[in-house]
Amino acid sequence: MVQKRLFSRFKKITVFLLGGVANQVFAQNPSLYDIIATSPSHNTLEAAIDAAGLKSTLQGTGSMTVFAPTDDAFSKLPTGTVESLLQTPEGLLKEILLYHVLGAEVNSGAVQNGAVVAALSTLNTLKLTKTTSGKVFINHAEVTTADLPASNGILHVIDEVLLPNKTVVDIALGSTVHTTLVQAVIKAELLPALTDPAAKYTVFAPTNDAFAMLLPQGLGSVAVADLAPILLYHVLGDSVASAKVSNGLVAQPLNSANSIKLSRLSSKVFANQAEVIVADLRASNGIVHAIDKVLLPIKTVVDIALGSAAHSTLVQAVIKAGLLPALTDPVAKYTVFAPTNDAFSKIPSNTLKDLLQDSTGALKNVLLYHVVADSVRSTALSNNQVIKTLLGNESITITINNGVFVNTNSQVTLADLKSENGIVHVVNEVLLPYLTSVNDNEQLSGLDIYPNPASSMLNISLPTASSFKYSVVNAHGQMILSGDIAGNNAQIPMVDLNTGIYKVLVQTAQGQKAFTVTKE
Image (tube, rainbow, N blue to C red; front, side, top):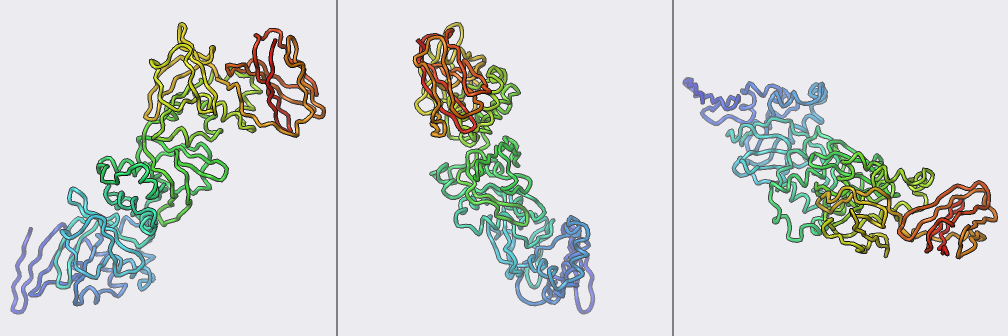
């Protein structure tokens, strides 16, 4: 501290240089305005106060707290902002300056983390943060020099200009269903980041019920070090309206530990497993979407597929079938038998094209047939083991004979790829369920399949359709025959098929119908 004493007959001046702030102490302490006016780093603030007619306010009696942005703080504003504000100083400029003033004296030691206080401007409140390391923030601005005393209050130097904009934090503060989220943001010391008026965010905001489902013991059960990464996983560094969400969009949040997988299913939007229940709550620094579950940045079975170039077709199918929300559930446990691109390429091209277009719902059934609702490691698999899948009552059968096989022909080529919500086993054949859960369509009345039982040839006859597709699936869920017919009739050769029961699916422009056929 450098002190300079000047004596005269009437007054005594002591100049303290504190972090670039010249604080004149007269026989009576200087006013808040005097501190600003004698500071070499507050020229812009002084000019703004003079222009807005607030000099007398800051020289007057009473007790106030002033958060004083430096010249460098003003220089961070967009080019031309200060000049524009000075053109109408009695309007917005005055409100902005009053947003930096409290009507009572608050020293840094009295600041409580998460306190929301009223400024002299009624346009918005100020959000205070006191970190565990002792730093103090007012909204996004850090107090760089604290507790400069004045005759009419106290002054704190800050490194950013405060703007009374409505931020994503204000949306959460104004919602009765986001009180837990607000507590979490305060506890994680994220108020400064989320109140930044120059930022652009998308916040997926879990409701109180969402937090209660995940943390029945409350936020006290989560360490501060663990809480911030979870919350930052809910924030994108850009403003994304719900209308801009495309099905299968993979977005990178502020926590780079994992991506967020977005789904659009009919009129519903999902972020991972969480449904957006209220969309497009707009703030000046972004947009908020309320969600019904808490997102966790864990590695899921979906991430394993996304990270594999050999599973791009599977990823495409999962997105198309609307299964991203289910398979990204962080509290679920799954085993996924994951067909490679080569496995999908073994399906006849027309059939695969139709399957991936998913006009009938068959794609979802096929994929659910590859998923077990439990985490089953390869060491837990046994010969002739029957495992129920997520497709209704449909099961797969494990065969162990010089390797592990699913439904006889699909071999596990890579086992035990672990994620935090399950295990992935890579297979080289697509599993097709024996029962495809296809609803009969009355518009296909008159369709005839004969003879049944069949020995050498199966006839398909349609009275009106000009073309149709057919496929034959065996009892292991494998598609063994398929074709396109340009006319109304087809003959399917059955002579080389083993004796047993088969499923025949017929598809036309009017719909589809499934039949059970016996081969003698």
